[in-house]
Image (cartoon, rainbow, N blue to C red):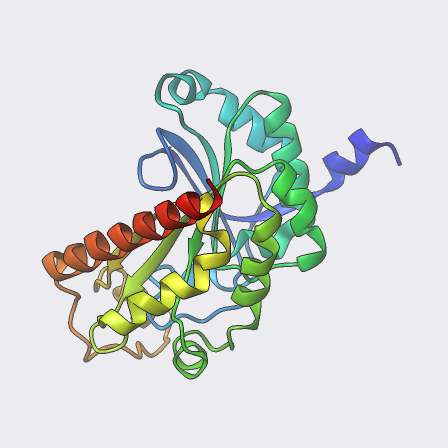
Length: 259
């Protein structure tokens, strides 16, 4: 089978598309939300994106055709295409071919991931990805297991792999009251990402919110954080400012040591 036919045969499992995204990477972006995720995050606001079955499919050609309609906006704002989910790296063979096709058209690429994917594809995927949005769920294995249903093996493997990545990484963390609104957790995040600090541009602290909880009742899934209040935005902003100041200081100290 030729490479072209092989690419045409690949199909991704798709949840939805957002055509003028402003929060999933730099500039204006087309965001493809892929279906299926190995995690079961208690604060997930899209539980309908977790299953791998019974969903729409999309081809690489359809992704490129959709993206090209908005290329003028990408070029004007430094935007591009973001693959989100679900967990896009669980469909790595398809994602890799889509990334290659987008780069051939001069379109910037970004992947929003929790770091739980098919490891054998990481090295190749890195070659065609400009930016990662990396979601760190928690820093402690027992809490991570409770919050997501899986231990921290996946995120640790992905962080290690990122030491060979030459693009940019934005760290994201959903701050849940009582679980991660603590200075020691912020310091632990910094220690986790220390090996890749030179490619981390910033750390976003996203306050836990209640939006999307109605989907759980619609899907007949119990919502585990029912009694947990929404995170105060101002408090999260203070934590975000402080952790980014520490990140920049860490990067500067490393630069001065190597100068």
